[in-house]
Amino acid sequence: MRYSKEHKQMTRQRIIETAGRRFKRDGIDGSGISTLMADAGLTNGAFYAHFESKDDLVATAVAEQLRAQYANLVQQAAPGIAGVEQIVRWYLSPQHRDSPDDGCPSAALLDEIGRCPDATRQAYTDGVLAVVDGISERLAPADPRSVRTKTLSVYAMMVGTLQLARALADKRLAGELLEEGIRNALGLLAIAEQAG
Image 1: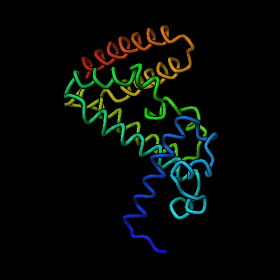
Image 2: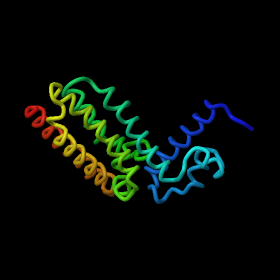
Image 3: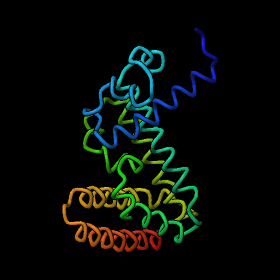
Image 4: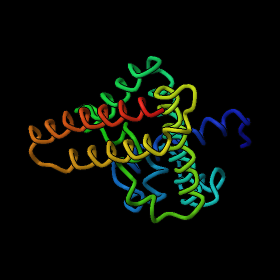
């Protein structure tokens, strides 16, 4: 049976979305093709009609997750420093901490992405820089590149804070860590804004 182009694209998108959630929940190495395809309601045989390899799917899913983060978080935030504060507060929120499969791929997969092939690492780099550049544009609209590295450093701090908050067994301590992370990130970004 031949499917339309639209059906094939919708199926591919379903695989990407379900794989992205599974990767963030169970890790890349902990997610086999059989499980990923079962999540999408498909057979293993359908996988290769959409992707050359698992690495191809990983690169695509990571890029898509970061694109969605940019569209849903960065582009929807208020202009200027108020928008930056919205982004930081969402990122370091208890809801984000408690929902890794619906959250940022950086906090869920960073250690594994560093060991992935170059194509996946490049897809990740491009996606993260889009997020960072969106934040930088709010901090220094006249010259966003002047604060890019500082913003990337603060983003890294936020990722690490979220990872540690997820790992702590003490939810109260984890909540305090998130609040301190918000204060630290906003303080550093305010300094970057003044410098930019």
